[in-house]
Image (cartoon, rainbow, N blue to C red; front, side):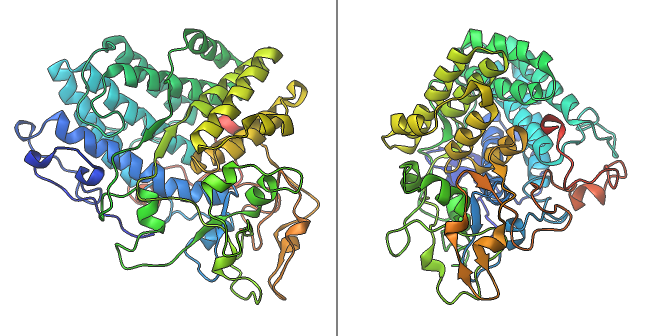
Amino acid sequence: MKKIIFPLLAAAAFSFAACDNYLDINQDPDYPTEEQISTDMILPAVDMNFCASYGNYLRIVGGYFAQQYSQTFGTGNYLPYSQFTMSAAKSGGQAYTQLYLRVISTGQAVVDKATKEGDWGTFLAAKTYKALAYTTMVDCYDSIPYTEALTDITQPKSDDGETVYLGVIAELDEALSKASAGDKVATNFLFPGGKAINWIRLANALKLKWYMRMANVKDEYLAKAKDLIEENNFPSEDVAWVGCWGTAAGEQNPFFAEEFATNFGSTQENVIANITLVGTMDRPSYHDPRLDAWFKKNVNGEFVGGVSGTNFSTSKTLDASSFNRPNINYDSPVYLITLSEIEFFKAEYYARTSQAAAAKEAYENAIKASFKTAGVDGADANINFYPYDQSNWKKSIGLAKYLALAGVNNFEAWCELRRLRYPEFSSEYNGSTLYNSSNSNYTPENYIPGTLYTPIEVDNKVGDNHLLERFPHAEESTSANVNTPTGNIDIYTTPVFWAN
């Protein structure tokens, strides 16, 4: 992946009119003295470091692991991800170092300063970013240091994922008890100029997500979700970094800068739509208009999906122009959580508690919200094509959510796919059935809509008809901390705690 450098600006330059003002994510994480720094200077660094990791690296790997992306003709940057491979070397960087050092550690500096100043709106925002970083790392690795992190302990133990989830929720609850709706919040890009009410609603939405994930394995967390749903103090619109991007290097949407811009001398194109999406959303009997919003048609004005595990480099009939690239611009939003996701979590709560009518209503609201986010009409036709089925609610919600996240948040799509287990793998075909690399025969007609398939040359540690379940612990962790879990379980096929 390209190395994106966000320039470090002097304090006087922090006008924050555009995202070019975020701090250098590659700089040493040592801080200036307390006298030289303010929360208005630190929080934007936390904000943009999380956005850069979540909206770029995790979007890319999540897209490949969820089988929403595949590798384009003739290039190989992300081919291993397309084959469900993740190495300890690749799992560091933006998934470990950046989140620990540049979000959690820097976020704690904001927490400490806000505490001294009684700045409870900023306190809540910083706690929210710390919680996001910790839970995102759990979603990748499962067990990570938490209770002994940010202490003088140089070899912190790793805590199980449930302990981390509950710990950060407790921290958020503490912050929520201190903050009032009208409290000011230090400069940030997620809610520029906004008051603490925005962060209160966001924290509630995140807690709903985390409780519903834990409810997947323990029903006791449904009561916590019920309280949040009844309070109904959630965001009134999608939460995203939007309206803050610029055209110059260092100012652009991070995924655009990685995959589409030429700021760093590279013109290589990698990401294309997977046949799982194309074959499900573009059927003879129904065309999902969100596909047009999220991906560009190929040179022939058609949708043609790539196959996981290959880059078609020997094909005589296909080339890079045959496939569909993501429809991303320099100023495209980076979504943190959407109204559609919130409604799907409500639908799942109602489904799990046998409230079929309420589940159906929330399910349909989720699809309508997804179409609104995509900026297209046709939600009612989609609902008619995919009607809610309480008797098989996991399939209904799982597939609908998978499609709704395809152009919005691919990392969350991978998470929810691992948890709800829909779409399912088909036993009737695999990647080699769709594309024969020996004779370049591409047969998309063999794809069964609404199913996953085993990639061509799938990583043998994952095997047939299985998802990659988690990342191996990063080299940055295993080389520095003897307490990093290694070798105890099959990390590639053992689910994280909320997916068991």
